Amino acid sequence: MRESVEIHFINPVIIMILIDYLIIFTIVTLGCINIKIKPGKIQNLVEYAVKFICDLADDIIGPSAPSFYPLFIMFFFYILIGNLMGLIPGLFSPTSKLSVTVGLALIVFFYEHYIGIKKKGVINYFKHFAGEGIPGWVKPFMFFIEIISELARPLSLSFRLFGNILAKEILLSVLIMLILIFFPSNNVIQKSLTIVPFVLRPLILVLGTLVSLIQAGVFTMLAMIYVAGAVKSHEH
Image 1 (spheres, one colour):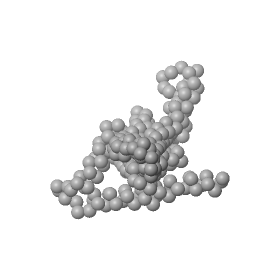
Image 2 (cartoon, rainbow, N blue to C red; image 1 turned 180 degrees about the vertical axis):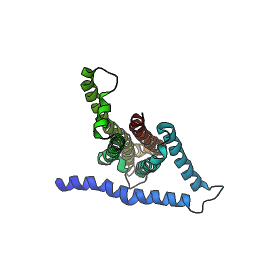
Image 3 (cartoon, helix red, strand yellow; image 1 turned 45 degrees about the horizontal axis):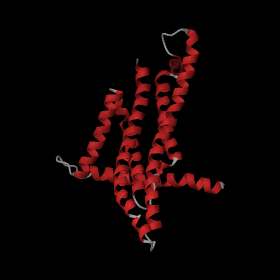
Image 4 (cartoon, one colour; image 1 turned 180 degrees about the horizontal axis):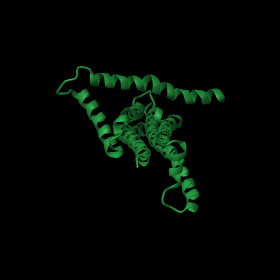
């Protein structure tokens, strides 16, 4: 049992490292070599995605956003490609594994608080959780509420991404199983039932692509909001 649990945990991690990074490297390389004033399709796609992420970070975080560009660009492409991998026959989305999404959420969580502690120091950083301009007897309750809120962030980040991508994986798996079960049958009625999966699969693929894009964007945007909260609260 212990062996199977370890293998179940390692598989998605290996796929994310060996395949995801390889694909990201390929996309970025294709988008950056032979750069032209009038960009080609791949270069234009990469430039648009990077510009969109950077502009969004500027709007949410403000003047200090450029120092966080690499983090957010990495999150977006890493999650997007991980989500899309499940649409390829024979592969699965590593982001449908809770171990992967929790790991990504913890990176955001610890990085957010690292920034705050670096800017204000440990004592002053944790003092701001108690609030300002409120009666002293209220501060312990405010501190407790704020800490609970902070701890809930990685849970919401990880489960939101995990749940949506897992649902996509289950839908695709069910459609494939229906085809494999009914199509080889000699029964005309059973064979006709495969028409529904054949029709729905392309629609699910389109929906899966849309969900993959949206979830990558949502995770990245929430990461920006959390980092912005740490940056702005300590700049005032």
